[in-house]
Each structure stands twice: as C-alpha cells, then as structure tokens.
Image (cartoon, rainbow, N blue to C red; front, side, top):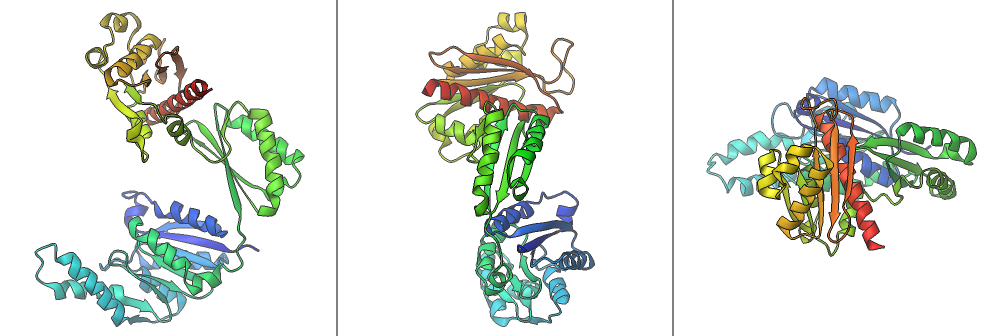
Length: 423
C-alpha cells in the first residue's frame, strides 16, 4: 500500500474566502513529487476544536503524514502548535534557544522602526517558542518556526505565508521523522497532454474506448480538466507501467492528433515564448483589458520580444492610437474582422514590431445584438510580410469566461502562425 498524506489548511481568512489558499495546491504537488498519495485537503478556521477535528479525521483515514499550514503567529488566535501537541499527546515546553533565535529576528526587524519597547514585543512572541516535547524544530523563515512531530501519523506544522512555508517544507522533508513516515512511498511518473479545440465529451468517449483496448488501463490514474478552453489530461502511473501510458498516448494522438498541441506538459504560453525568439510582438485589445499582453509578458525574458501593447475600447481611441479609419469602424462596427485586422496593422506600425495580435469583441453583459451577441469575438494575427489570419468566434460563459477564452484562442492562433512561418 502506498504512503498516504493529508493536508490541513487553517485560517478563518482562508475559510471565508478573504484570502485564497495557495498552500494546499503547492503542497499537493510537492507530495506527488515525493511519491506520496494525497488522500485529502481539508480547510478550517482558527478554532482549536475545528483544527483537532481535522487531525482526528485524517488519522482515522489511516494517513501516514499530516501537513498543516497556518496558525503559527504570536496572536491569541494562532493555536495550531498547541492543538497539534494536544492531539499527539505531547506537552508544550519553552525552547529557550529557539526563543533567543526569534528574539534576534525581532531585533533586526524592529531596528527599521521606532519601536522602543522590545521586551513587550518579545513577550508577545514567546508563545512561538513553545514546542511539543520530542518535536523537531524547523527554523523560522519569518518569525514563526515550524515543527515536525513524530508519530502515527507524523505531523508537519508549517506557517501560512507561502514565502515562509515553501522553503520550510524543504527542511521538513529532510527530517528523520518525515523520512521515516514516507519510507514506503512509491515514486510515480506523471505526464501531461494538452489539447485545444476538442469537446470534453469527445475526450470522455475516447477514454471509455481506451479502457477496453489498452491493456493495464486500470493502472493509470487519469484526471482531466477543462481550463481556459483547453483540455488538460494528467496521467499518473508507476514507472513499470510506462508502456501502458505509451499505448494511451498513441490512442489520444491517433484520434485527436490535430487537437493535441503538447505531450510534454508545455503550455501554449511556453511554446509561444519559444517561437517568438528573434521576433518582436505587439498587441491591440478592446474587450480583454490587456489580459493577452499580460500572458505574453508574464515570464522571464519577455522584454526581449515584447514591443508594446494597446488597450483601446472607444472608437476614437482605436482611430487615434492604432490608426483605424473611422469610416471602417462606421461601416463594419468595432467588433468585426476588418477592424481586428486594422488594429493588428496599427500595432505593427506603432511599435515597429514584426508580429501583432488583435482582439475585439463583446464580453458582456449587455452590448450584444441579434447579429453580434455577447461572446462574439474577432481575432487577427499578423506577421510582417504574410497574409493576416482572421477569425470570428462565439465564446460561451460570463464576462470573465469570454475574456479568458479569448486570450487562449489568441495564443493558439499566434502559435499556429509562428509555427507555419518557421517551416
């Protein structure tokens, strides 16, 4: 039986949605990398009885490792360490050496501010130096230390801020207690296939057929996710089942080869960034508010190929900034292929780029007509010296859905045009 783990994310601010949980998904990925099967992620407020209920639930599920995040601060509502100690049947004791390390951190922090009463601050933070007897201490990244409490299950207690939790997790994995808890783990492989333009129902039919034709299919753990109009198929399996996964991949490519754009896990953003090497790209957007430009620039080195971006909603702005002829706007309307092409040409000219992408559409709510309902979006990709690629699509969903799907469509049109130019 594989090693199993559970994650408890604590914090009333996370429970109520004021803060998004980034730790649960991040820890889930790290556990997978270790070959540890994640059984549950639970979320609860800062109340000790609720935290303990999550710990009891996971222990009853037979997990080998529990990882908690949050509740390690100096304030009265930060009770995770005390709750874990009680759950594990261990007394809390003051670690004087740890208290002094925390005090040194506080001195450095307070040197930046006019806060004369150091002893009052030190006293308030003393509770952070209370640790369960026999626990391994994880030195603070901020002011909050973590702890690893050996046992069945072993419990790893980490702080809530991701900038503190992530480096501390690496230290936790190196402890003897965690090493012993995950000693029986299986190191899994994980591969990702990405598709675009395929309905989820068509993929479901293919997977049902593969279940009957691929020998050992039941040994593959397959999850599918529809994200921004793309289908992501993640398959986890033991190394010995590499050939089984190979059969599945053959089925996917033979049936949906035109829709498969990645078999190595790379995203369309990764591929476009690589294809833009040696080029410069400009964008012109009217219904996506700069989201396409953000996707193109959200990676190291993007300044090497990004020439500039224009977000222009008003017709006057399209004319003044991008040089779109008012007569063209009047004749075809702002949401039209001719205007999308003129916007792309304007972006090329304005920024001296050799590649341009334009998006103009109706994301809603409101603003649609019978001939151009909400969700109508026009695209244009232009590479200098080549015919423009123009498309009009009707995209489903609310405003955010339409905007996100629009940027995905634009990235795929750009990828295809760049690949054609590279041949």
